[in-house]
Image 1 (cartoon, rainbow, N blue to C red):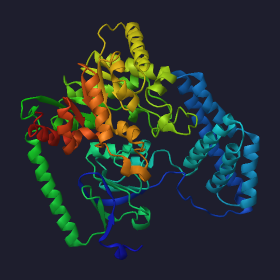
Image 2: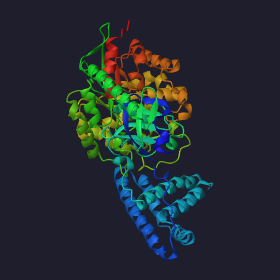
Image 3: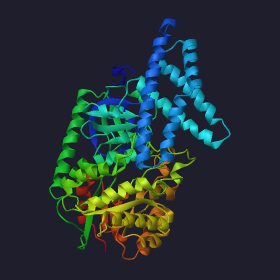
Length: 546
């Protein structure tokens, strides 16, 4: 589509994160989705092209060796063996012969040869009867991706180099992609697939980045460099606006900024209801910049610190010392304010590449959260030790993700005690459980016997109660966190837990219509995106629990 044909074109979608933004489109596609250049070579160029492929293979083999060594050191030998197997595949003479034969026969560039040969190998493995061999197909895909990145000269994630003032345009954003989003460069996002409960939605809201989703055939209408106006309130996007449309939009942005400044004037005041109850308003964060925004916006502390960014899109797991130092630097702006740090919540759609976990038919109902930590205890130990060290300097609490059984909390508490004794630490930080499933909600009383506090994650609780995947755009209309079924779950938890402290850290905590309901059932601590803190405090001051 030509630029003139698209002028003032309005694309209607779904408001994923509120706000207004103007910027140039930056199109993003994953390496395996990308159309690699296809060009012919002569018979005389075959040897040179094969040398190029060989060099890429050598680099990948070297990287896999380093990864295996680090994994064995941080986790265990079984986990490291996954990467030794991938090395063995790349050293297989039959694979190398097939690559050379394909090159001599087809006479096309190395990227195309790798895609074709590895696609055949992947299909071959997936069709095998033995489940172990079928799982090897994922290794083939991983190796192919590594080789293509090397051949294409891509040594960093493409989103690390997004130009300033960009609006990110993509089919969808995975959690491993969102790690690289930055307020400094990305002013907005537009995606074809994604619901309000997706991780892309959560992160953009926390960062205060306007986002719009559910625009069919998005990449058909938006080209690299197009000027976009995003309305994260209505869910609309204007492509290549004329001068008048752009000026009107800029005036709206100015008015929004004025409104936010007024809220900031009172953000450091205590949030008290009309009937005199004090409500704590914490912030959900994931890095030092988020913590700084939380303090600037008047947060009483950090209610949920996510550490996934230290694990996603890495070749190796962070060490205990790395975790300690990264989180420590992030917490410095807090001074003596409290912070609740959640242990790694991986699995489902948040894949940890260095674990190379086996294929699961339904990963959202599989090994995620605490289940993964108990499966890989070394992974849990390095986190626990880092947090125990931090507890000597900061006012922190530790939160365990995706608890469904009370015995999981028992095991995590035992792990904390063992590591604390080994480190000579007498005073333990409080240990809490996340209530994110109907099973946990219905058995909150039993879970609380092993927990010092509870935190309700309404995003996953909604997903599992409504049977609607938060990342699945096909059922996004069923993802209703204010639905009576979800509210009944909240009522049950509040009724059963007695005096156990509890907070709500999901998206529901920041919704205007839901805050009064949460306060009425007894919730006294809310945790929301940093930029929402002033607005939530304002709503609380206008609310009565009587």
